[in-house]
Length: 105
Image (cartoon, rainbow, N blue to C red; front, side, top):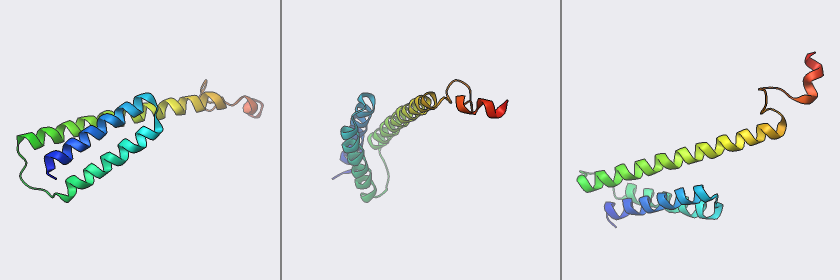
């Protein structure tokens, strides 16, 4: 396998990862992440060396897609945190819990 092919595998996996994140499909996310990691390992095994324009462009695309995945993941984590805070009474006022109000009075 060539570096080009390994990078394309990573890019395809990143597209699948983004789609899984958007649809909250955990099984697809696990598959895409495993494929991505396998592709990255393959790129690493192929070693480093001079990179032509095409390889640099593919690596840049993989970096952009990975950043998109990171943003989606952070947004999902923030959404879950906000929901949990709302469920526990911490969402309305930072640190406020209805049962503890009397303790502060």
